[in-house]
Length: 324
Image 1 (tube, helix red, strand yellow):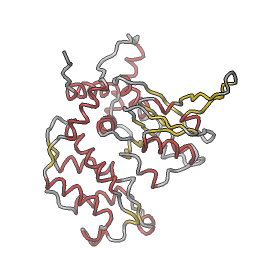
Image 2 (cartoon, helix red, strand yellow):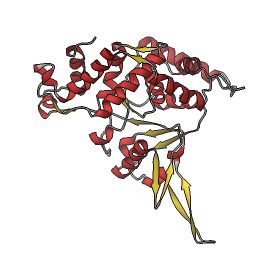
Image 3 (cartoon, rainbow, N blue to C red):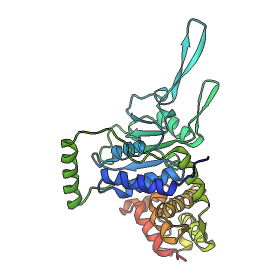
Image 4 (tube, rainbow, N blue to C red):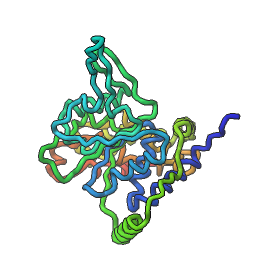
C-alpha cells in the first residue's frame, strides 16, 4: 500500500526540532526551510559564532540526504569543488572523481574568500544543476541546496561576489547577535549538552519524497490576483521607483530582474505554507521581500555617498507601494 505523505506535519516537526538546538535564530531556520521548499539557494551574512554552520548541519540531520562542508580559501581550485577526471594508466581511460558539490546539502563557508573561477563554478552548478568536466556533463542530485556564508567583518583577502552572480541566490539573509535572555539560554543549553552524553538517536527525519510533495503543494497554494499584482508592482518599483514615489527617484542604478519576481512568489508561498495556511497574504510578501530583494538592487553612487543601504530602499518601497 502506498504511503500517505504528510509533508506539512513533517516540516512542522523539523522546524521545532532545529529551533530547540539553534536558539535566537528562528528567522535563519525559517529561511533555510523556505529555500529548501522553494528549491533555491541561500546566501547568509553574519559575524562568526552566530550558528550559521550549526543551523544547516541540524537541517541536514533532519533530512534524508547527505551533507558536506567546504571551507573556501584563496587557493581553492574549481576541481576541488566539482571534481576532476583521473587518468587510469592500466587501460588508458579517464574516470571522473566526483567533488563535494554532488552532495544534497552543501555548505560553502566564507564563499567570498575563494577566487572568481571557484565562485563561478559554484554559481554555474547552482543555476544549471549540472557540472561539465571535459566533454561530459554530470547531473547534480534532484535535492540540492547550497548555503553560502560570508563574513561582513573581514574584507582583506576576499573576492566579493559580483551583483550579476548574487542574483543566482534565492535569498540573501543577514543574521544578528541574540538578545540578553537568548544569550543566557544559549549558555545553559551548551552547558547541558556538554554534561549529557549524546545518545545518537535521530529525531524527525524528512524523506526526499516529502520534500518534493511539499514543493508541489506550495505551487498549488491560492494567491489572489490582487496579491499577485502587489508582488509584481514591488519588483517593478525597483526598476522605476519614481513612478511610485518621487523621493525614491535616483536611489538606484539597477533594479531587480524577473528572477526576483519568481523568487518572491515562491518564497511567499513557502512562508505561508510553513505557517500552516493555504493562501498567500500581502504580509507574506512583505515579510520575505527584504531577503529576496536586498542583493538584487544596486544603489546609485549618490545614495551610497549619503550612507543609504539596500535595506533602506526596500523599507521605503514597502511603505509606498500600496498593499491590497
